[in-house]
Length: 426
Image (cartoon, rainbow, N blue to C red; front, side):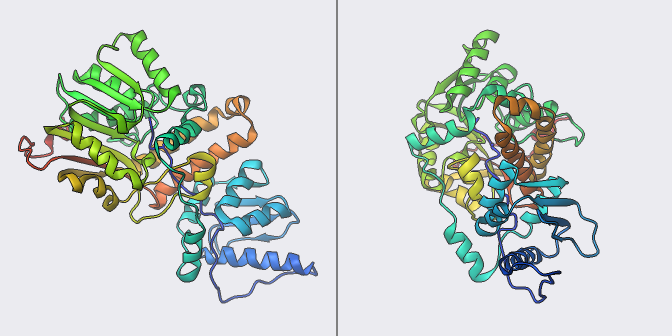
C-alpha cells in the first residue's frame, strides 16, 4: 500500500524454489516411499536456500533443523495437504496454508521471511520456468482499476483505523530521527514532500490517488495550497469528503471520485503518493500524458512509489489474495512516464529502510488489534493480513522492494533552487 504504497506490494518467496545440492537427505526409520520422497524434496528445497536459520517440523514429528545455528523461527507444517501445497505451489501454497492455519510460524516471522527473500530466485532454467508460470497482474483499465482498488481499500475504514496513524496515512513514513513515533514520522513525510515541491500559498495542486485525504488536507492547512484529489476508492473518498466538511476546509480541498486519467485543469503542482503501484506498466504513457497536459510551464511534480531494482512481477499470492493489479516499477521503467514529454528529473531519493520501519510499527499495532480484526472478518483474513504486513517489512529489509521519490519538472523551467538546503530546515 490513498492509494497506497501499499504495501502492495511485497512477496513471500518461501520454499518456492529448488536447485541441485550435493548432499543426500538422510531419512531415519522405515517409512512409506512416497513420504520418503516428500521429505527428500523438502530437504532439498531447504538446502537450496543456503542452510537458513529456521527449523521445519512436519505433523508426524520429522524435522529439518539448521546446522551449527540457533533457529530464529520454527515452521510447523500441520498436514500432508499443507506440505503438498508448499511443494507444488511455492509462494501461493505457503500463503494459502499460512492463512488457513495449516502452516504456522513460531518465533521471528519477519526474520524468517527475510531469509526466504534472500533466496527467492533460482538460477538458470528453474528461474525461467518460475517466471513463465507467474501470472501477470490483473488489468488496470478504467474498470479494472476500480475493481482492483475496491478489493484492497474498500474493505472498511474501521479496519484500517485499527492500525494506521490518526491521519490514516497508508504510505511510507519518514523518520529523520529514528525513534520518532509513527504519527510524527507521517507528518514528517508530508512535510518532506511539500518542501521538495516548494509548495507555496496559492499553489494549485493535482493529486492522483488521495487515500483518506491526509496529504491534501496537510497541503491546504499548512501550506496554503488549493488541492484537487482524484481517487477511485469510494470508501476513502467518502471518508475524506466528510472530514473536510466537518472540519471546515472543503473550500480548499476537492476530493473527486474518479480515475486519474480524467484529471483536468491547470496546476502548479502534480503529486502522486502510493498510486503508481496501481497504474501498471502498460498505462505509464497515459499517466505521463496526464501530467503533461495539466502542469504549468514552471510546475513541479513528484511520484512516490514502491519499486524494485530490477524488473519483476508481484508475488502471485499477493496479486491473487491481497493486492490485485499491483506492479512496483524500477527507476528505468518510471522513465517511460517522464521521457516522452522531456520532463527533467531534479531529485531521486530511496526511503527503503523508512518503509521497513513504517511496516514494523504497523505490524505492532495490527497485532495489538488482532482480536478486533478477527471479530470484523475471520481468522483466515487476520492471518493473511498479518503475513502480508510481515512479508512487506521483510521485503524492504531484504532489498527486494525499494521506495522511490522522484521529483521532476519541465526541462525549460529555470526557477529552480540552487541547493537542497530547503529540504532540511534547522
